Amino acid sequence: MKSLKKFARNKKAISGLSTAIVLIAFIIVASAFAYAVLNVGFLVIQKSQQVVLGGLAAASSAVVVDGPVYGYSTFPGPNGNITTLIFWLKTASGASSVDLNVNRTTIGFQNPRGVWPNVYNTGGDAMDFTASSVTYTAQPGATVMTWEGGGPYQLLPGEKVRVTIDLTQLTMSGQASPAGEIMKNEEFKVIIKPPVGSVLDIDRIAPAAITQIDDLG
Picture 1 (tube, rainbow, N blue to C red):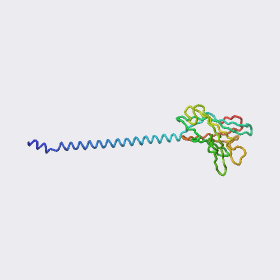
Picture 2: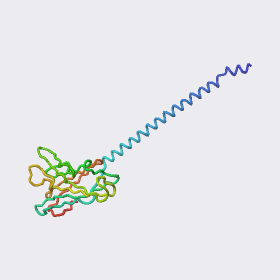
Picture 3: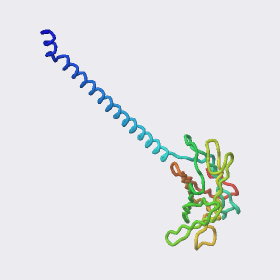
Picture 4: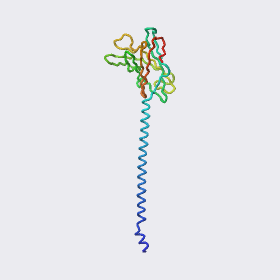
C-alpha cells in the first residue's frame, strides 16, 4: 500500500505526457503554418510568372513582314505615284495566333501630306479623322486582307496573309488628287496594331523613279 501511495504522488510521468502533448500541438500548428506559407509563396510565384509572360507578350511582336513591300503604280513615269501597296504578314516566332479581325486590328498609314489612323475598314463605313480642321477619309475597302492558307481573321503559325492597301481611297479635304498616293522620294509608314503584341511599323522610302512595280524592301 505504501508503494502504491508513493507512485500516485509521483507526477513526473504526467508532466512528461503533458509536455509531449504540447510539443505535438506546436508541431501540428507549425506544420499548418508552413503549409499555408508555402501555398502563398507558390501563388505569388505563379502570379509573377503570369505578369512576366503577359509583359513579354505585350512587348514582343505578334506579326512580322514576310518578304518585301511592293509598290504598284497605275501611271508609272517621272510624274507617277505609287497607288497600291502589297505585302505579306506572318506570325512572329513564338506567337500562337493573331486575330486580324477588322474589329480587333487597326492599320494606319501616313505620308508627308497626312495621317490616316485606320485604313483597315473592309466591309465597314468610311472612317473620318479630324485634326487641325482637316478631315482624312478612308473609303470602305481601302485595305483588303487575303489569306493564303487557313481561314480568315485568325492568322496561325505557318499561314500567310496578303495585305493590299489601295492608296487612291485615302483622300483629304481640300485636295483634288488622292492624298494617300506616294510620290517619288517620299517616306511613308504603315502602322499595324494587333490586339496582342507590340505595334508593327513598316517604314519605307519611295524610289526616285516610280515604275509599274517597285520593290520597296
